[in-house]
Image 1 (cartoon, one colour):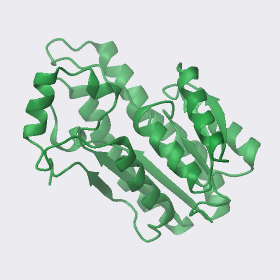
Image 2 (cartoon, rainbow, N blue to C red; image 1 turned 30 degrees about the vertical axis):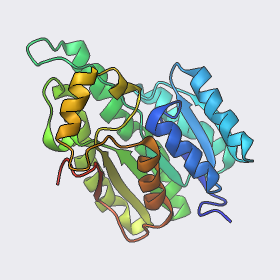
Image 3 (cartoon, rainbow, N blue to C red; image 1 turned 90 degrees about the vertical axis):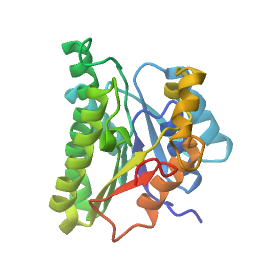
Image 4 (cartoon, helix red, strand yellow; image 1 turned 180 degrees about the vertical axis):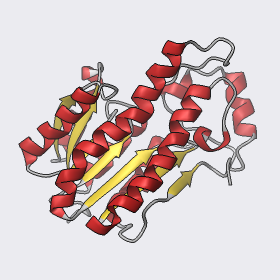
Length: 247
């Protein structure tokens, strides 16, 4: 038996990277998993195929979660399809890295809408169902950058720091309904986002990480599984999975 047998999970930004690893692990533990993606249908389908290869259950859920109507319609569709929603993983995120002197209003708004506002859109849509069930596990993907800041990432840092603050408030409001809300704050992780950084800069980053290496998407997924399946008395917390780069 899996730790999440009979549960329904929705993972935003599930077509690659950390989102993909999370979706696959939750499915391996028995959850039916809705795979949200925006444009990368090929990537999302490959995740669904991987889940099907070990007998898991997945459905594709195309939506631009930065748009409130689309995000809420996506959650509604998952509930209509499977009758419930137990685990919501707000993972979708983008970067538009520039120093503040070069940052445009569009760069700011696009990142805030995708990274932060989507967390509210999806959570507020899932809340009524979870309240009725008297059960829910909401995990929001923040970042080390939301805790420490980072040059050229004012928009990204603000979005990820906002997620931590939102998580704490949502946890307070939803605790009485047996709904936990926690944030995961990954450090520098080997994803497509990091692969775009030059090797020289990657070496500089690694030199600041006590463990001397980048994290793996699968290591982030293990922490999400813990929060979804085993952390019944943990809420309003930020779990740092970062190799010691921020303590």
